Length: 342
Image (cartoon, rainbow, N blue to C red; front, side, top):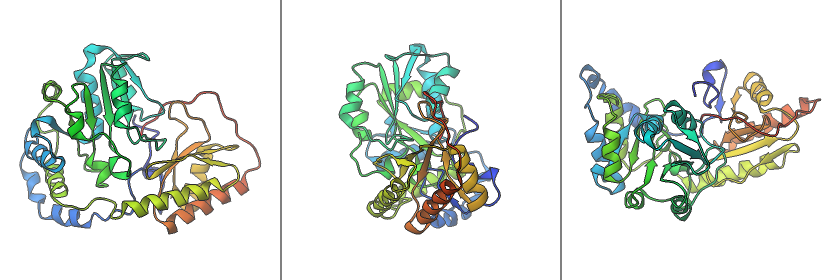
């Protein structure tokens, strides 16, 4: 989905604080920037056609064979590649609300939606709800669906136990999509990957085109994988900070803030529209949030915020409270929502 996503600060000229993306906004990427300065000459040559060295680095990092890894230009390429490769199975289902690209990719390749669809897509942790699903839940889904595709892009933002890549590759019809884009806070570089059993990986490779991943992205990925740091230095404290934000938002009259197991929070304005709140915060406060009303199954009052630090979070809380003080009319909530992208 080209429009209606988070991190759309390009539409505004004065954004100081960005809560609209699920990526930690205070990540220190200065070591990566310095590394890339030393590798700028790599753009003078074509990159590896298949990004094999990046796949080997991923495999070493997560402890599985390289033959079970396929590097991609972000999670979105992985989603469309899987839909294209498995299109002969014809039907799909999605655990909603969820990232719209699962549905969009399937519809591009002429699938039809069915509650018992052959391809079942879930996001874990789930964007936008913050839920986390166990390995048992994923295995149970295989009783109803031919393939279960697990988008684990946000795995670096939860302490809950998830199905690991090593577990997943032993289950013939489970496909995992992790993402360095999210875990290392580098969305502009587009680095993701797929892990699955060797048979599925071989099928997927049949639909790849060469030089999909740039030289700089390959070098950046290897640099990040060979290091020990992540976007969040202290995940325990960051998640505690997220819970403090949720409790403060819940304390504001007119807002519901949903429990979360990760760094982002799905909220609902009871009597106003999220689109109005977003515009007010952007124009008046220089603060950007995610209008979540276009996620399928959600309503005009839904919005999503990703936690920053306590100081920034307090500005968000005060900005939302100021907005609600300005409202004199009540919004309405329809019975069904729409779909959305991240």
